[in-house]
Picture 1 (cartoon, rainbow, N blue to C red):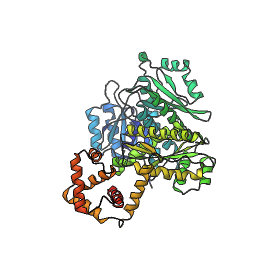
Picture 2: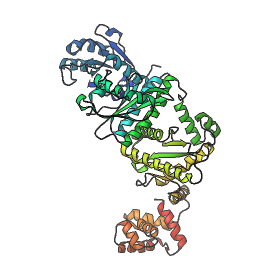
Picture 3: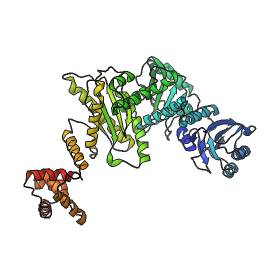
Picture 4: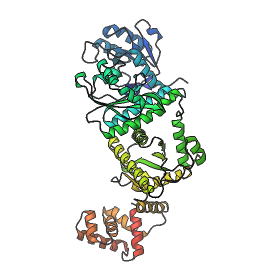
Length: 542
């Protein structure tokens, strides 16, 4: 079987316009790229189908022959340096026409981009998209690009992730407001030396290597440099790199700093794979957590594999996209992936040992080491609920989609973690129809949970119905009436007509008429408490 690569669309999205700009794409953006090849006009014979050719030593009309040769060999795309004298990365008409005639995609590369840097980044994207078991480095780079974009979403800034040699290994999509330091760093060149000297003189690099605290660096307008915050990435005492956030349209406040701390911890688990540190098993631990939550992995075994003592106090929080906001399946998958990244960053900032796992369409956070005794219990519960609320609000804001959180109880050991997850699910099931609720614990919504579960039992047993209530619903359907909803509001208000009218937004006389009419049509006796109770339950099914 031939290896799979990435589509042109994936490459363009991952690398961004600062590296590649599409000029023409006769076959569209779903063309598959399997290899990146640097070539000059004399060695086009080495090109093969599905290659992305990086053409060195030829621009403009001089590249026309190479474009035609590459097209004849079935090359997926060819990248050519743009003219440094032009303000925009546009090509001459003959070159564009040659690409169209040859059926090959033509990409523009800025004159300051280093070919070797572009080749390395593009190859990592291909490896990450291949899905092969040898793709750790590429998967790592792809994960880091996703992390950078997540941090950019949360902070509103421009994000770059660097290794210990200060080489950019991932970055967020670039908007209009970028400064010279970011632009040159992404293009593979060093930033302005006067600014780098200031960073050294201020001890910024030393502080980033020594701790995982956020370092704030003031703007230097005279050098064209925006304000920045940065955090070091560490595995134990070993520095692995740095995450930088340059200010965007809004100031970088406390929320941005918290997100950056979490991002540094998430990046550490990813970068550690490359160095074979003890924390290389993040994906493995996430899979173990998923198995613990759904009962496939025994608690004692899971505790050992995750690295927790069996009697570690913990709680599970479940997050889901609100039911009323769910889109088609592809859109859901994209949203869910973005939500997992966001929650991972916030969870790592809240508690270093937090683990995140996706299961059955929901995202779960395990917060271990939550031992609370006596008076501490309430404090711990409030802290966990406050965290869940903050995350749900942040995810709702950043994803522009309602996200809700359900908090499970703080349990005394790993063997009870599954029960905490089930409790979180009960809460989510109960609040899913109420978009005004961001997060809740069972104690806050116990009546809602019990009512929702009672309704679920009734739905599962369609024979348990009062035909008089069914007749009332059918009458409304035939006549587009609102008798049933008015009766439910009347019962919810304990017979208070004015309260029911206020809830429905109608005159009290309208409620009186509808309730009387409902009695006539269905023969329900609302003076009978047992009939009132079951009528209320059955009407809540819809």
